[in-house]
Image (cartoon, rainbow over all chains, first blue to last red; front, side, top):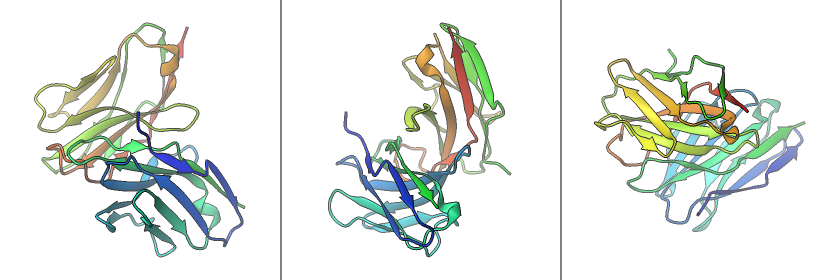
Length: 113
Length: 119
């Protein structure tokens, strides 16, 4: 069964450094999302992306965050200058036109030191 | 106000028994979709079941069914014949708008319920 693939599974970064989280959505999906989950808390929406542009973003998704679909398969989340509070599990998700389910990747655990 | 409320931080069930995980939601949008996801200890998020606000019948997927009570704004997940592998965190989520079947829109999640299945 096709799945959303995220790399790396775990990223450790010094505070203030830039980090790029990578995702390969399911190939025929058109809608892409990033969510995050701080340890022990609920999953929170960050941003949605469709037709090569951001369709919606949350208040968490400030100027330090950006997303890009550099080619036909990858979807990336960049955090420009990481903060301690950016430590979380980051999930990429994708969904297909006409079907309700958003399919999540296994997540990238981001640890900021 | 919370859009999704899961009042049970933890639930226990005996293997082979049925269990109900509660979820209530709050929206003024007539079109919405309700979802349940399972998160095992390994961390991934697994889609289980979906219910659209205009769906006349309760959704079912194998051992999972969604008890949708629109007037009460509840969307409880029922797991029948529990298995040890069902032990996980379960999240209820809502997407406002687009309940007609399109897939676009952010999900808002509840706090989750940890289910433990005892042998």
